[in-house]
Image 1 (cartoon, rainbow, N blue to C red):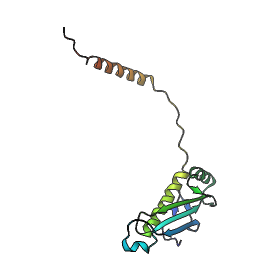
Image 2: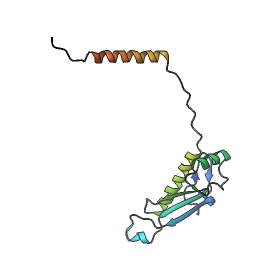
Image 3: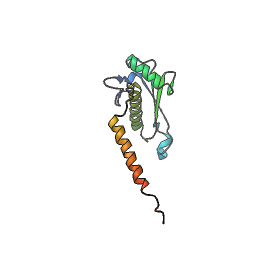
Length: 145
């Protein structure tokens, strides 16, 4: 590609160089009228994640693990064909690749530490339950004498 679209930014200052991206274009299904048979508006963007040295080793390991189901021989493929214009589809494909990589390289969430409810909280909850029970108890039918 000739570097006309936005660079694919992973996270922070890490950017996938255009030289590592492989673009393929083909005919797209969908609207387009008479123009549809002549234009290659469907975009396929490929990036060899396994062979690339752009990502820091920790990120690369994370990405390979999290994207394992999407990778074919270490290559990540993103397709876009929702727009009639090839240019818009290119932008969509690049944005999709960037968001995929951003999510895949994100640090794992902090583990949850189990906590106990405070004694006051427990007492308030039980008191509320007692109050509700007594309210509902009073809603019974009145027996005729």
